[in-house]
Image 1 (spheres, one colour):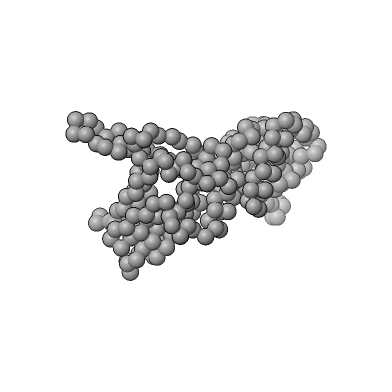
Image 2 (cartoon, rainbow, N blue to C red):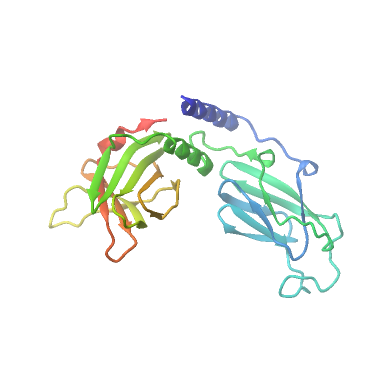
Length: 289
C-alpha cells in the first residue's frame, strides 16, 4: 500500500512537472562554488549526468564517471606540467569566471564559479549536488530515472521472496530461482535468487539474458537476441550461500515460438553453469507495484 501510494504521488508529480515550466534562474541567485589553479573540482550527481556546459573558456572539464563531473581552471600557457602558474594569475580574487550547468536524467543544476587565489588552503575539492540546487527537467511522465528505478528495486528486495517461485532450476548443488516479475510503466523487474548448497563459494562471471527459439531445427540456425538489463540493484560478483538481486529491463515482447533464456555462468574453466527458460506467458502475469 505504501509503495502504491508513493508511485501514485510520483506519477502525479511527473504530470504536474510536464505541465509547468521550469522556474527561471538569474545569475545572482545561483549557488557559488570556489575554484583555484591546480585544483580539480569534482561535482557528484545522484543520477547519471547527461552533459555538462561550461560557459567560458576559462573552465575545462570531463566526465571520469557517469555521475561525476571533473572541472578545473584551463591551464595557462605559462603553466608547468602540474598546471601551476609560473606567472601572476590572470584572475583577481573574487572574480566570477563562469557558470557550470549540470544536466542529469531528471534535473538541471547550475553554479556560479568564483575564483580564489592559491593562498586559500580551505578550497573545496568535491561537492554533492543538493536537492535545493536541482530544478526538474520536463520529461515524459512515464519515464523514470535510474535513481527512481533503484528505489523501486529496493522496495521489491525488502519484500519476502515468494515461497513458490515462478521458475526454479537445480544442478550441481545450485538452485536458481525467478521469484517474481513486476512491471511499472514500460519497465520489467525480475526478482531472482541464487542459492549455493555446496561448501565451494560461487564467483559470477556473467548472467546472460537472451531470447531464443523454443525449437531448433537442423536446417535452421538458432536466432538469439541478447537482452541487456538497464539496471541491476547489486553489482556483487561473489556469494557463498544465498544471493538475491533485482534486474530491470525496458519493456520487451516476444512470440510464443521463443523463450527468454537466463544463463548463470561461473568464473572458472570448469565453472558451474545453470540455465533457466522463461515463457512469455509468465512475463505477462507480472505483478504491478
